[in-house]
Amino acid sequence: MIRSLAGPPKTEEEDPEVGLRPFLQNVAYDVQDRFNATPDPEAERNRWLDSFRGSDVESTVFREALAAALRAQLDGERESFDLVVGWLLGENPPLARLRGSIGIGERLDRSNSFLMLRCLCQAIRALGFSGVLIMFDEGYRMVSLSSTRRQREACENLVSVINYCGHARLPGAMFVYAVPPAFRSDVAPRYEALRQRVESRTPLSARFPMSPVINLEELSLGAEDLLARIGEKLLPIVEMARSHEFNRELQLRNIRALAAEAVAQSLDVNSRRIFVKALAASLIDQAVSGERDLASEQVESMVRETNDALRGAPAGDEY
Image (cartoon, helix red, strand yellow):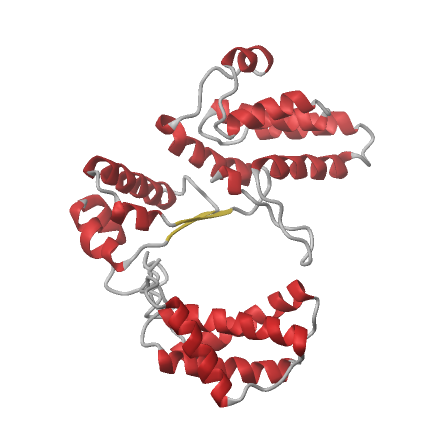
């Protein structure tokens, strides 16, 4: 997960840089910019680092490693920065080098991976960010695991995540697990602690904001309205990607037509996949060859062809 870490982009036009290395470098750049105009930038940076080192992060080793990486980046010590980042990424550079230059004397492995995940969430808050969103397809893995021991370990980790969030030990952290219906019907009932935490008679809604389950088939919007809203959000993304400004009124008509047809041709959650793929193809084509209202037979053909291409794809996801 730490390899996929991405901070917020500086501007709406900028893509976020992905990975721990650019994340820490950008934090250091921001710190430099913040204190460069002060009478004693080095002293201010040291006070900021000391404040971070005193933050509430469970593992002293993890916290000190992050502080060492930030200090190395601020001081321009590239070799030390790469050494600590290598440890944080689980590459386990030689302990002799880590002990001698940074004082790290333990390895990262499966035994302490969950601790380090918690520490990362805590450290992100300590660095001044609002929080972190972590999204897993872990539920699919739990359903498919043939080993009872490994399935139990995965479920126990999920229970631990829920407990830590419930006890406010991971402030600002949101965990989202994508799971198929079989997770709740077949896997969770085998583990009482997990069943108690994910069991809910009602999905998340304005009336039940504390429900742990987001059922994609029981949302507050109707199927067609939901697809139209998704289409409205996709439109500016394609505009940015293709450097093309669409005729909004025209494209909203096309979006509505495709949404209605996708719902008509598909009776399950797969309508979302059909709609998104058909709309993306239409928008990309029209950005190149010119905008036009889609005729009803075109809409029907596009949705049918997309449906045929996606036939057999898994559907019925929950979160």
